[in-house]
Structure formats: C-alpha cells, structure tokens
Image (tube, rainbow, N blue to C red):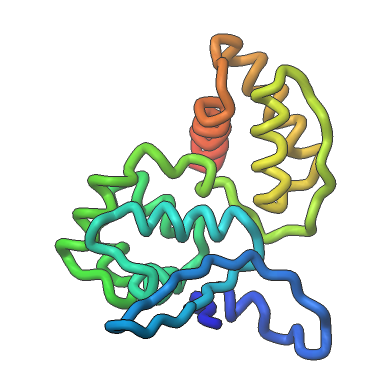
Length: 181
C-alpha cells in the first residue's frame, strides 16, 4: 500500500492503534500479468482530491501520490489561485504538469479548500437538502458540527440565491478567505 507523504505524516505515532483508511485501487498490467496497487487516505475527501488530480491527463496515480506531499487545502488553494510556482514545488510536478493541473481543476476545488486539522465532528441534518450535503462535506473536512452549521446558515442568509452544495461550499470558502485577509 502506498500512502501520500501528507497522509503518512498524519499517521505518525499511530502505532498500535487500529486505523481505517479510504482506499483507491489501481490494476497495473504487464503483458498477461497484473497486480493491484493500493493508495491509502485518512478520509473520503482526501481520496476524492486524489481522484480529482487523476482527471488531469498528465497525472497518473503514482505522480498524484508523490505530489500529495503537502496538506490538501494548501494544494487546492494553489490550484484555485493558479499558483504555478507552488505546484512546481511539489515532488514530480514540473512546469507543464502545473499548467495542466490549473487548466483542468481551477474553479473545481472549492470544497477541498475548507479542510481543517481539527477533531472529527458528527453528521447533522440542516435544511434544505443541498445544505445537508454541504454539511456532510464540512464534517468530513473535520469542522465541528456547530461551526459548520453556523457557516452554512450565515452563507445562506447572505446569499439566499444559492441552490446547490458546490456553490454553497464555494461561497463559504470565499467568505472564509475574506475573513482571513
């Protein structure tokens, strides 16, 4: 099993504890022989980010695994901002791959920008339905339930025209980014 460097770092010190990993599997073939290669992640959102990287034509699973050496939110921010220099600093990512990543994924990584290193939170049920989906994503990103519900409520109050989870998450990110700046 292969672990991206940032995932391996998160698992340091977990010796002797039971772990549950999200797995991405790939069948590698060589002539008539084949073998599976497994990539492990600490949560479904990390695996989805890895899979998003794989949608870039010039990125394969091993390249994506090596490049995933920094926290997901930082890589996603570089993609969203078109920061080619930062992307080139990742292992195995040169100038052309950085351009390819930005061209394919810019504007499509909003939910990955919200990741936090915090305690795990439990799922809840706000309304409307797309807000439930956004809440589930925020909880997977390790936001606390109360904080996630507050962000959703404030964003929906400020932008009632939102009608789907992806745009809601993008607006939450924009509001968070504005609050930090």
